[in-house]
Structure formats: structure tokens, C-alpha cells
Image 1 (cartoon, rainbow over the protein chains, first blue to last red):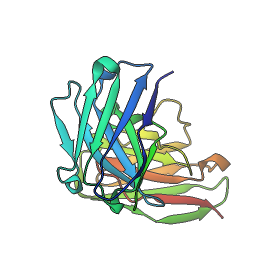
Image 2 (image 1 turned 180 degrees about the vertical axis):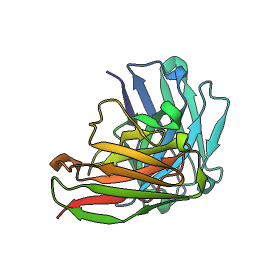
Image 3 (image 1 turned 45 degrees about the horizontal axis):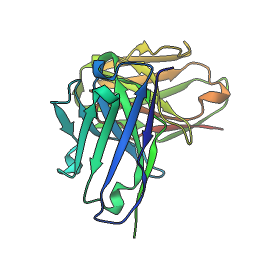
Image 4 (image 1 turned 90 degrees about the vertical axis):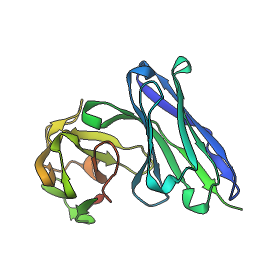
Length: 118
Length: 103
């Protein structure tokens, strides 16, 4: 079965850091661009970041402002999101997603919740 | 920027739903996608390239449009279709979503 499983979410204090992981199974990760998308409670979907197949090209939403780093380990079939200097506004469910046909996201993980609070 | 309308639409099962997504500036229609999201679930890809149904998506879902105006139509609403729908451009920014609720 083709699937993505996120982990690493939790409660973190303002200014803290967290690293999210996204484990892929049922397909070869290095054949695909991958993304992170987030969703604050009760709000819409917001794109966060993208990484190309080999990990040497990355793109971020403007609001990330150098605080987040997307990376991948194709040998481990795993995608990562390192998040630093977290604020309450970063509180959200974080989804990883696979880019496929014409830049659409055909496979999504179940999401991992990140709560930034003191 | 993608602007979806209406924010919420109230319809009965069996009715037709017409959802709008307006892009500014215009979008290459090859790169416009639609997703469905139900409470507590991850989004699901419905339409890619503005008009192509994703694998397993019923033919009551159809997408159309080009340039700045795109439309998702659900021809006859089934109970499982009541959800929030998002458009997306170029594998990045999303619209604000349209909630299809039961009337």
C-alpha cells in the first residue's frame, strides 16, 4: 500500500524547535518531489515547503522566513521538516504530501499536530 | 492568489454543487488542482490539470476552466460529498476553501 506516515509532532514552548518526519512506504521516495502543508485549527490548507528528488533544490513559503528546513534521506525513504524559533502561529497539523501529476498532491499523510504554547 | 466562492453552500443530497476558484494573476490550467477534505482527515486529490479526475474519483465530480476562472461541479451530491473543497495552483498556494454543507 502506498502511504505516508508523519511523526514528531507535540507540544513545544515558544522559541523552541521540533523536527518532523514523514516515512514513505509502497513507493520509491526518490522518484518524487515532496511537500509539507500545514493547517491551523479550524483554518484552511497552507503550503509550507517543497524539495526536489535529490534534495538539492528547496522552496519555502515567505512566512517561513528561514526558520524551517526541509530535507530528505532517500535511502531511508524519509522526508523531514526542521522547525526552529517556533511561535504560537505555527500551531497546526502538518501534512507531508507527494507531488505527482502536473504538480498535484496525490498522496497525503495523516498529519502530525504541532502545538506551540507555554 | 486563489479566491474561492462561496465560503459555504447549503445543498440537499441529489442537488448540483458549483464551486468557483478565481486566480489572480491567471494560472496555467495544467497546474490547477482540487481537493476534498472531511473533518479529521487528510485532503484527497479530486482533480488535477483543471479537468482530469484522479484515480478512483467518481464521474459526478468534474472540473473546468482556464486562465483566471475555474469551476468544480458535483453533479448529484451524495451524503459522503459534504466536505470542504480547496483549489490549488502550481503545487503550492491553496484557496481558502468552500464548505459544502447539508441543507
